[in-house]
Length: 79
Image 1 (cartoon, one colour):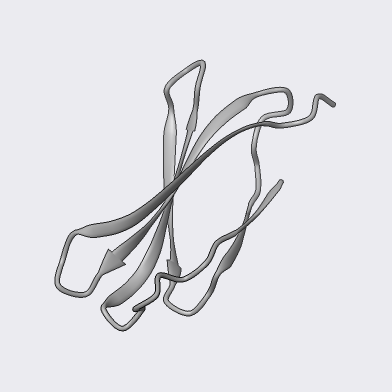
Image 2 (spheres, rainbow, N blue to C red):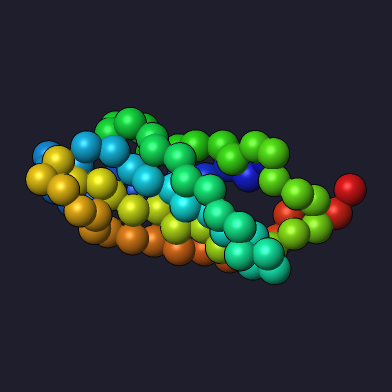
């Protein structure tokens, strides 16, 4: 598992949730999870050992659309 945390945007009033998208860099398979507004951390479970993932965290806006994207690339430890 990978523990993620992020900072809220300076004005969180228009944010309805945070969307985490994580993609296996080799296979291009991706999954997405939404985290409620006010939660600034999440643990991704079930990742494959020894695999590189590209992870994006975006703010979902109440008015629609997204903003404030942050990205990171990680490699999970081998078994």
